[in-house]
Length: 287
Image (cartoon, rainbow, N blue to C red; front, side):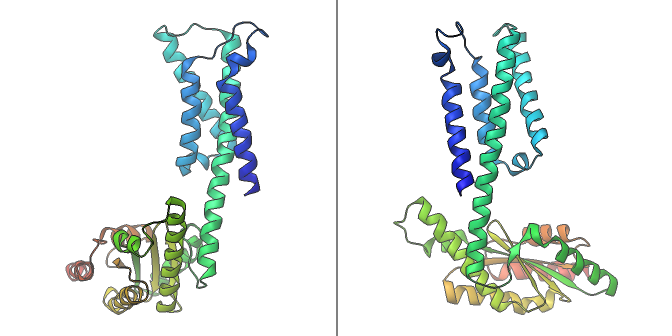
């Protein structure tokens, strides 16, 4: 949290300087003005790095090169259409400004993401259980898939997604946006607790965004229906929240975890029994 505050303050001070550079430099180094597209580019850099994970996960040098190239793309386009004139001194200053903005914005974006991840861990840890981030479960997923292939045993992937309408109904309608976010995290933590208490010990429980993913070793689609019913009824009775559950089984539906996850996700339809019916029909078709 302290790193986030520091990085936000530095970015704010930097933007104050950049957007008022003409006033600061007035009378000191002569008339100086940034090209109009620089402000737009710096704003785009900040918003893009905060919103898109793949951008903030780029190595520092790649992030720097990307936005410098973006600057020169704007610069060349403006030069061609005659909006600006080539000026080496101003160009070098603008490159420095864009570079510093990309570094500071990346730091803010990464700190915001770290705080968000910490909140997630605190929420899920407070309810116990064994739910983990899907990104952190790669080794366990690989191990279970290898075991299923080696011993020719079934394995099922379930995707559990709370219904937004009933999930929101369980929160107070009068709370503001921040409280809603915290309440939603709390509700997801409670759902995680119920799933952990309902799932079998060998089952791997993971979460991503607003979904939970269960990897169930040595489990066919048919034998998963009992577990699906238990999860739905437990969450509904304890929390008043409806969930949709889609399933896909190895090797009938797919041979890799990503394919199983994709097929299970596609079977989420926001209802109850139809999800199971789709799964049963697919299994019948494959057999």
